[in-house]
Structure formats: C-alpha cells, structure tokens
Length: 215
Ligand code: G3P
Image 1 (cartoon, protein in one colour):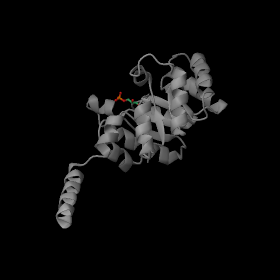
Image 2 (image 1 turned 120 degrees about the vertical axis):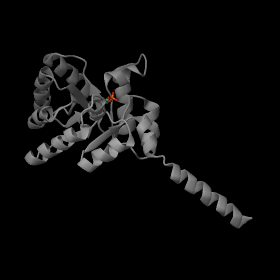
Image 3 (image 1 turned 180 degrees about the vertical axis):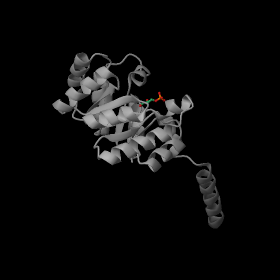
Image 4 (image 1 turned 45 degrees about the vertical axis):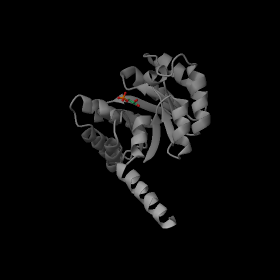
C-alpha cells in the first residue's frame, strides 16, 4: 500500500519525505486554508518539487465546464498534479472530460460503493472514500471500503482506491488488510505510526544495560 500525506503543510511534507514515508500528497481546500493566505498554485508547485510523486489539488468550481478549465490550469503546474473533483453529477461530467484529455483525477467525497462503481467505470485515476467521516455518523467505513475493493476486483478496474479521512493507526492497518491501494494519512497519524511505548521502553533498557558493561 502506498502512503500519501494528507496535508498542505510543506514542513510536514519535507519531514516525512526525509523518512522515506511518502509516495504522494493529498490536499483539499480546508487543508490549504490552514496554511493561511497562500498562493495556491505556487504551493502546489513547491509540494510537487519536494515529493516528485502524485499531488492532489482540488477544484473549487461546481459546474463541469469551469471544473475542467480549473483542471487544465492546475494540471499544467506539474506532471505530478492529480485533479481532485467532487463526486457530484457535474464532477462526473468533468471527470469524463479529464479522462478524454489524459488528466489524472482523484474523485473525492465518496461515501458509498455505488459512487466508486460509477467513477471506476469512467476511468478515474483514484477514488477517495472518506472513512473517518463515515465512522463519525455511525456507519462501518470498512464495510464500504471492502465493497469497493470487491467491485473493483470483480471488473478489473484500474482506478486506485485511496483510503482517506483516516483518523488513527488502526484505520491504516484496516485499509491495508482490505487492500486499499493508497492510504492518505494526516501528519498526526503518521507520527503515531512511528511510536510505540514498548519500543521506547525496550531501547531505554538496552542502553541502560549497555552502560553496565562499560562500567
Ligand atoms: O483527504 C480527505 C481528508 O482530508 C478528509 O479528512 O479528517 O477532514 O475527514 P477529514
């Protein structure tokens, strides 16, 4: 399973890139807004330069022609840019045009398997089920993810399943167990993946014992 980071923060991206943990990045308008008053296109260019892998940038229009115009403009920033489109009827129309134009896409705000079936048939590059937000409303997100995996395997769809809205390490493990192609992981969860108290306690003990040998 590939690891993407779910942030627009360049420092976090650099930090986890240096650890060899990043294959790509996903951003969205809320994550971009956290960075304050920024030049979004420059930020995406900078992220692409660091990551050298897929970087999702989301359109903000809600009408297909404008979405496609935004998609053309954003994808011209770098070969690494992937256009995030909302999975609404106008977004699907924009997806068809992006597929025809060879523009890479990430269909976002997916909450049920049939939405994934639709975008997989059309040929989206990625589909992003938002797992944490389903759990938030008392639905079993992993049932949804498993159904999408099954559908894509049934029909050999090339669309990659990008598990999104991950809130804790267990989500990452569950997504990998089901066979998501990618997990996009927020920085605070990436930090948690790297920490285990028994590892820290064990290391402390090894180092303390080593001191005894030297003494
Ligand atoms: O990539 C989508 C993700 O950012 C949504 O996460 O935590 O806002 O549900 P969250």
